[in-house]
Image (cartoon, rainbow, N blue to C red; front, side, top):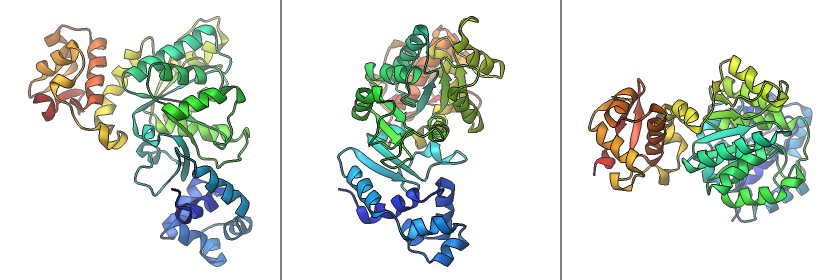
Length: 375
């Protein structure tokens, strides 16, 4: 059941003109709660930096719009995540301009699972679409959530790949969640809400305005450990997402393509600038494996952090690795020598073990077997 009294102040603030996440967080630094902020005097709001139009919107909000927001939130599977909520995504708290609120449709727990964003051209080649779906499917099978922007082309292929693999996917939208943009993805959005999550910082009723999509892109990269660009022209929204990812300290990956494909030029430019060239999913896992060890506690839901026993962990390679580790911290090259396996295959298995909670990365690129995996 929706707690209208608790949510209404947040809805008032997010609907006020030009009162974005930074302004709302500034208000929360000055006032004990969102309720106190919207109940403050004109003088107090002016002292907090709001202009006349913003103060008017806070003190005389659109009652019909608020009622529509609350009606939308009252339906099953929908919620408003606020900056003050304990389960606000930890990864988003790290970025420079985190949204103060997130409207969510679906399972909000997916926002706490380690995510890889997959982005690219709306006018992708058949090979690009196949690559996006294949990479998304394999990442999902490895236990990662796949995040994208619900756009045509690469975004849609990435979402579908994760769903077909039986995994979870997060779609960050540039509209209110009562609308689907593009309309051709209405069925896809329904499937994502059923097996993942649709997310937006925009309240219901907000249309697909051009200025909304760069704002959406910072959330796509902010939720993720890394961003994979599959195909992109030299000037594209995907490269904006990649730039934001770098600014946020995220990993950036790019798939190379034919020199004759204009949709590969953006990826080639990223690789020249230092993005990791990717040929297989293992190229991604090698880079993010150590990050998962240090970020599991903040990114995984509590139910997913319990470490299984050795008998519960996957294949023969994983069992061999656990046995080879013993009770010491071990470097990857040492493990490769002990189990006689290629480093790429070994890193992939280590990532699966980290996601299962059986091992943890430690400083220096080494790994340690966790206590419960010894039982």
